[in-house]
Image (cartoon, rainbow, N blue to C red; front, side):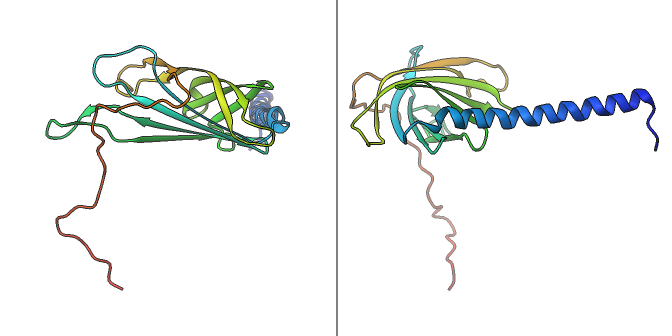
Length: 202
């Protein structure tokens, strides 16, 4: 098949755009790695709650950030997000969400010696970003664990209304280095059904 001049130009343009997108993706990953390359291994934990207080049960968000060798992962555990379950019972199921720089779902930038700006993508193709800002101090020289001194989080998608409507909410840190919090909503745990149990034969 022969390409005329117009087709050939469109083909070249498509190839160049694809190459630019690929280079941009690689460049972003490399820039992120270079930004954190000089940062010693770091572990940060902080708890937060929605900024806008709602009536009823308040969800609690526990964030664990780990960075080493220029790579980072973020874990978010959600507790007390109470919902009406089958039979009319109010309960919550613990939720775990994970992001990482190597999967492309997380970006981390060291904005100073004691601050990080974290971006998580809540959907594919780097869409629905949420932003987290950490201010921290290291507990001791050579210790990977740090103490969070300041924390901001915004741009989280309200999963109770999504995808019917796209609403966002922000989080604020729970005050107190070691806070004790009573959860008002019962936790719903998945176990093994007692009806017709199946035994694994050896």
